[in-house]
Length: 111
Image 1 (cartoon, helix red, strand yellow):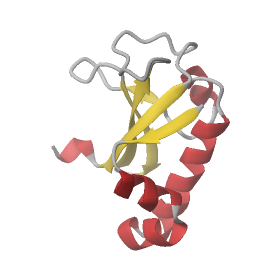
Image 2 (tube, rainbow, N blue to C red):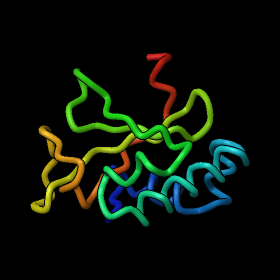
Image 3 (cartoon, helix red, strand yellow):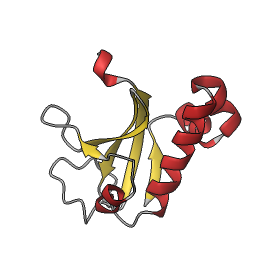
Image 4 (cartoon, rainbow, N blue to C red):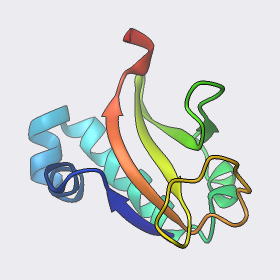
């Protein structure tokens, strides 16, 4: 799948092991880079469910089209499904989504 990022800073931090390690620590930096590689290698979002232990899940009901994958308890890599036209996808067909936008690395359970 194609990967976009919400901000240039997030892209730079997530794609650089050294910057990710500085931001989140060594263990999470490795996990984030691994998850990004898994997302990039996937044909569609449905493929991520078969890449343990990602625990790819749709955040419902208040965050339509937003997914999360584990990167180290309690943190998640949060991303949005993007349509071919570049628009966020609200109603999801996981077999059709070929692009995602990384939104954040967060512990959303503390929100």
